[in-house]
Amino acid sequence: MSDHGSIAIWLTGLPASGKSTIVAALKPQLEALGLSVEVLESDAVRRTLTPAPTYSQLERDLLYRALAFMGAKLVSHGVTVIFDATANRRAYRDFARSLIPKFIEVAVECPLELAMQRDYKGTYQRGQRGESSTVPGLQDPYESPLNPEVRIDTTKVKADEGVAIIMEVVKRKFSSRV
Image 1 (cartoon, rainbow, N blue to C red):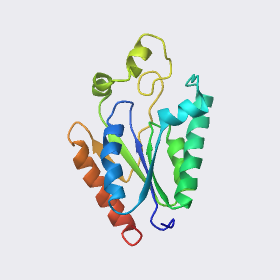
Image 2: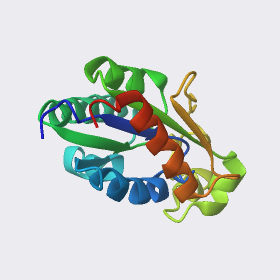
Image 3: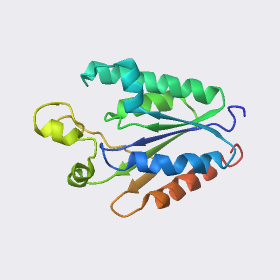
Image 4: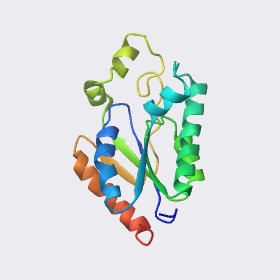
């Protein structure tokens, strides 16, 4: 499939806000449209780029620039990309948007307290114990999107409902191309 049908969707939100759950349900919906879909998950890419991550600002800058670059390349080759990445600074997502014309930003929202309860990876616990000093929403700021195409409040909307909302936006914005 040409790049005419490929888009990029960046799901951003606090760690443990529900991004990965939505991504897991979104990917098959996009594939059902006949799209080739690749998920760029920040932790997986981080393990390749920085096998011993420090989560420093410089390292995050590198990671998110690399994610945006990879996503742009994939989209230009006809692959639809789903970014599953906190991207705690707006500048990271804005950079991706500047590289990828067909871009949808999805704000996955939930209160910090709930994200901390859902935290199966232990990210917040490490931050509270002082083992990490850069947890977004805890010690490092998380800059919510100002004008995302989609907002999903995971305290009110289940993953499949969130996917339906995203799919409506995809079809409305890119109906002639998807």
